[in-house]
Length: 204
View 1 (tube, rainbow, N blue to C red):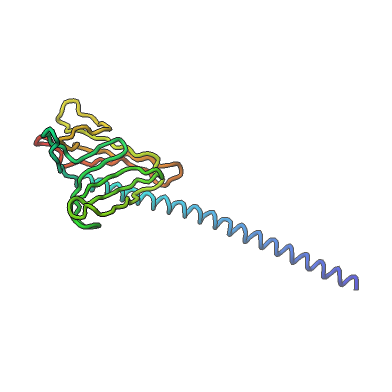
View 2: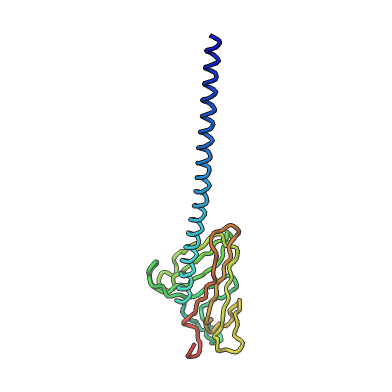
């Protein structure tokens, strides 16, 4: 009776050892799989982030190059183009083709909000001017946004400036620089948009 009990106990111990070995093997396999899955997910996230950044870059260039020199006459009779160029904010008049909204003239604003979002706000000019418009997020996790403006290259001493103060015309070129918060996927290559409505001499 005692001998049979020892044989059963030894057999059970052997089963436990085999079971632990199999469990360790499976744990090692699944652990490696989870590590690979995490790496793959991180790569996919970086690729999607880079693709989204590239889409936004192309969109901004197209939007800025659609700007027009719509103007008003100031009290002193001077011509004031409806354009605001600041270091971290830009407002310009744009002719939209109607692909994503009703075609027409829009006052477009690009800025960085307090939550680190690069946002765009398009307000209809003329018909629909009283509509309530909410900003749309283009990019998240943005650390800084910087605009720079270049006058017509033919002018003496033309260089990039961070405030556009020439009320009578548009800049020849607008540069957009973005930096992201730590850990955000993707990198930003500066956008340069050339404004066809800039009042530059022939040949530029």
